[in-house]
Length: 408
Image 1 (cartoon, one colour):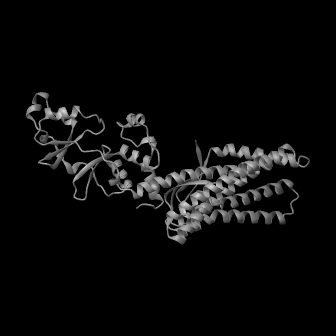
Image 2 (cartoon, helix red, strand yellow; image 1 turned 180 degrees about the horizontal axis):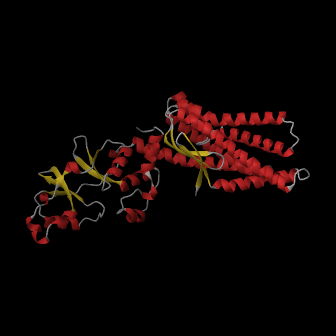
Image 3 (tube, rainbow, N blue to C red; image 1 turned 90 degrees about the horizontal axis):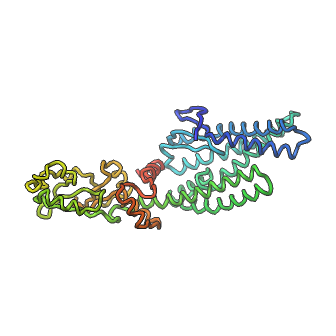
């Protein structure tokens, strides 16, 4: 969906997502209906809508202002931000680099809640001092102050990517010295609290206040989804970070002797059922030499196959993309993405080739570690396509891990 740029600060575009149009009218209608039902003898329908629309407008302005201050603090703590998009009740930052120390993250996570609490106190003070006889103005300020209080409190909940969640995770990280401990603890807390908040929001919606009930329920639902996603991400991240390629079942190497002719080589090619792996490795007296593929058969007329050996077409094995068997999976995936054919040759500590690896093999391994076993029907459908199964986007996951500073 579309978004519109509202300003540009420090080279960062601030954009409003188009769903704010729907939210603007939904909240305006909800507030105006509430005002009309409770104070119909004071406000006309037109005045009720004015209160609703004005409140939502100033609420959006306040959210933008708070985000500007928050962004400034983020930059001061070493973050690099690509863009910021305002969605429902806040903003999503797309970062190139996160803050890599717990104290900096604690500072970042405290900015928004404190600003909302300060806004609440300021608006409450204005209400107490105002001598305005305009009830519309007083009503707008009152509703706005209540909204800022709710938003400040819910931002402090230790849930997922909310400020309270980041604060909780960073405090544990700072005290224990382990970033992982903070993340795992936060994930458990997020799951429990989000479920409670979701149930509370639904009860509030149908029994007390539709507007604030929906607000609470949405926050709870976001928390539940965030916990589920983060839990899966943590598992995948752990596999990619701490598992080396030696733990995987590699694709066996196909050997051909250097002195066999192309006619015999063609017979070997015919027996190859793997359409993806078309590489053969040349040996001489049991020692590895170069490599070639079945494409070399097209380079010479069939009548000359009997008199031409494969050694004439072999390429140095050093030209094949290679990785050591003790490398972690995330490094193997990076190397796979750089390899033109999407296949890597794995060598042992003595630099002796021991097998091949492709995207399929890595995908199957990670899925099994997650407890997901693909059926043979699915495997047969995708085995000739060199991509990660089930749409697993490992390169993007690795990019996120680098952004967060979890890997160098």
